[in-house]
Structure formats: C-alpha cells, structure tokens
Image (cartoon, rainbow, N blue to C red):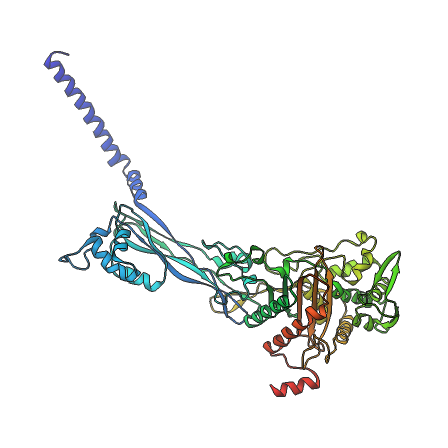
Length: 572
C-alpha cells in the first residue's frame, strides 16, 4: 500500500465501482422505474382541499326561513410567496410584503403594521382571517397578491331567533348538528362536500401546467316544517306569560291539526336562541313538549268515558249518585271540592269533573279493556314525531294496577304522558274517532321548489264516529261559551281541564280543547309545569288556551261558528 502505483490502482478501482453504481441507479430511475418515480414526485406536490357544502334551509310551512347557511370564506396566506408582490408595476418603489400590506390593510380593516405581521414569516399555510363575507373575499382576491387564497365555509344563522328554537335545534361551531330538526334531518340538510386537487411548487404556488381537478360541493336539501312562524311566536309568548303569572317552572303549548297530523305550533318556556345556545341553561336546549312526562289528571277522564261509551256499558243519559267521597274495595276516592250528594248524568260527571263519578263509570269495564284503550289513544308510546329524545311516558299493564291504581287511572293518575301525546289523543275525537300520528315535517324542498312529503302519517281508528261525536258534544257541554275562562268569542269550543300532582310535590295544570267544537279544525293544549300549590287547569291554563286558540283560528282563517260567529265575521 505504500507504493504510489498500488494506491493509484486502488483509487481507480474505487472510482470505477462508484461510477458503475451511479450509472446502474441512473438507468433504473430513468429507464426501468421512471413512471413510478414520476408518480411519487407528483404525489408529493399534490394537495387536496375540501369544498364544504352549504347546509340546507329550514323553513316554516309558508316558506319563511328559520335556519339558513350563509356563504362565508376563510382567507389564508402562504407567507413564502408574498415577497413576489409588485403592486401591479415592475417599477414600483414599494414591493413585496410592504406593498401587499398597503393594499390589503384597508380591505381587512386592519392597520398596516398588523397586516405586515400577518404576511411575514416562513409559513406555507396560515389562516389570515376567518368567516369573511363574499364581498371581502372578492376584494382580497382582486388584489392578486401571490400566496393569498380563500376557502368557502358556511355560517349557520337563525333569523327568527328563539322562535321555534326548541324545534329547529342548533349546530356546533364546526357545523355538527347537535339538536332538534338539525340533528334529526342531518343527512338531508348537510349535503355532500366537494374537493379540489392541484399540484403546487416548492413555495406552495399552484403549478399552472400541473394536475388540477375539482368536484363541486352538493348543497343540502331544504327541510319544510309544518309549523307557522307567527303562530309559533304567539304560542311562545302566551305560554311564557302563563308560567310567569303563576310562578311555575315551565310550560308547553301545542297547536295540532287532528285531520292531517300537522303540528302547527310546539312552544315551550323557557326556551333558547339557537344563534347562541351556550348562553342558555342546558336543561332548556331540548323540547319539554315531548320529553317532559306528567300525570294528565282530569283530562284523562275523557278516555275513560270514551271507552265506556264505545263498549256500550254507559250512555250519555246514564245517571249516577255522586257523593263527595266513596270507597271502592277499601280505597277512598273523593272529588276535588266538598259538595252534597248529587245525581248526575254522564255529561254532568264530565262537566263537574267528578272523580267519584268517573270511577263508577270505569267500573263498568275491566282494567284490561281500559288499558287497551289508553294504548289505542297512543299513551305509553312515542308519537313518532321527528325530534330526538321523545319520552314514551308510562302506562303500566293492567295486571300491575294493584290497590288504588285501579281507580286513579280512571281519572288521569297512575300513568304519565307528554304534552304532544295528550293533544294527539284528544284529537282523536276531533277526527271522527281516528288518531293521526303527529308530524312536524311537511317534507323536503326539491330543486323545482315543490315539497316532497315524507309519506302519509300513520292513522289508527280508536272509537267509532258516533262515539267521537258524543265525546265532542260532552266536551262542548263542559265549556260554557259565555262564562268559561276557556271560551273563545264567536266559536263553539270543547275541552277539558287537568290538574295532577307529580313526584316532586309540584303540580301540573292543563287545558286541552278543540275548536270549532261543531266541526273541529284545531286541537290546542296548554300545560303549566312546576306549580308550588294546587292551581286548577281552569285558572292556570284555560285563559292561555283561550288566547292561543283565538289567535290560531284567525291565523288559519277559520270562520267563526254559530249566530254569534256570523256577527263577528261581519265585523272582520
């Protein structure tokens, strides 16, 4: 190795080996494996970005927008490219970041120093400003500053504020559906995101001759509700007033079309504004009208009487001796107020809301038969309305009606329901004895503007037409059109109050009725929860029922009935 000639030969050998290795690798890369290497290079410089779809609108039955996604943009910057900005002239004295900041600052409403700071750095991608309006985006892009771009995003807004908030629901800051119709119909509303794919250079710039592909986003479908915005607003105002007046913890109001199953208002208090759900109590972000269950109280007497009439064990002319209190198999049942012994017909039992009389009527039926009727009226089962977190309530099987429960179930105690269930059940009498499944969704709006229904609501015949007519007459008789707090000027109204104590010691007061009673179009229910003391439904709920029903009838253009109604119609 010490000989120069030996070292020389060894060096030449090493060089030859290296040249042969490099040559072989070059032949492999450029010849045998050229396509794979080229594809690897393309993959490394190819970028795919999402184009978000705009969420569909939610509207009321008349097309009034209740939820909408407005087009917004997130501005971004590749700081490595801004230095190439020449402000439109190759002779400009100020170029690069300083020139870009001078042009951009007024558009963004920033100071030049803040804009310089945002444009300076080594970041290949950094958000510049998020959620800007299309006009701002267009103004920024028109400056043609290298490295500045924009991605379309959507901002969800609710123009009616808290009106219908408990029905509409809301989405999170990232657009994820979290409650209400937004959640139930997320698949229809959300649409399909698109994407754009392009090749970029070392500094992030788009390569004009490179691969560029774009798949447009498909925006979501519009969902049309059955509610009327004005009626919903009024219902919320009325139920809020009743809750505040009586010092209750909450309340619900329902306006329902018994023939079609359409829920025209589903209001509650407290509620929330879906524009800022975080500012409300989490307990107020759901829908008490379907999730809050309670004993219906005296309103449940309607189902006992209807079952007995349908089974033929009683008639409207049947008479009963009604003491203030009466013992049944060792269990004491009493009426709500002290009174001397009375002799009442079926109509009198209902009008006086007698617990004793109702139990006498119920004893003409077996508990099993009464249980079957409660289930047929839809109690103890979810209504199927298109909102999350509905409670089915509780109706125990008849073989569990032990002791006093056998008798309390006759007058609306010993089982629980939700507000919409009760209104739907009473609506059976207004629809010729047929109960129609409630619905809040009219359908989805097609591209041509037509509304595609979701399908026919399920219908169940519960009692005969004759029984339904008899029940309407009994309910009409229970509401004095002149003196009752539930009366509606110009219209015949039928209904029933309800008051019951719940497990926490508070009371629920309610009134559910139909109007016009001689040919019902609407069923309206008002429910006041969390009363500290016993306050009858005729005091706490009936006046609110009267006010809401009056507005609903006029809102829907339903003509007054009877002679007084014709006089009122002439005044309109």
